[in-house]
Length: 98
Image (tube, rainbow, N blue to C red):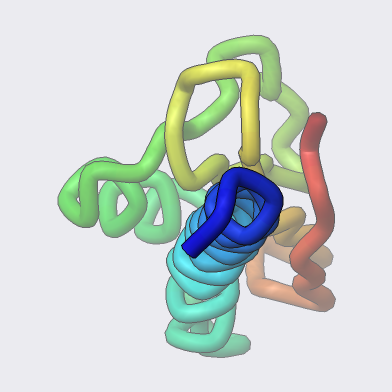
């Protein structure tokens, strides 16, 4: 394989690895978000997130929502935004948090 071929292979591997990391991180947030039922309370969601090793935003003291991140580091983070009405889950969505 010539130098150009090796360079293209290296770029392809780098892009593939980056995409795989992106999918893995998004799957963590989507999996948690999908497992939250409509009858759960905010405290229950926070407890479950912590037990799954996920990071709950410490700045999020609002009782009407909670942000659960897949990890603390500033790169490739995804968050599950869970909103509450009358103490129960009213909506949830996953988004890129970087």
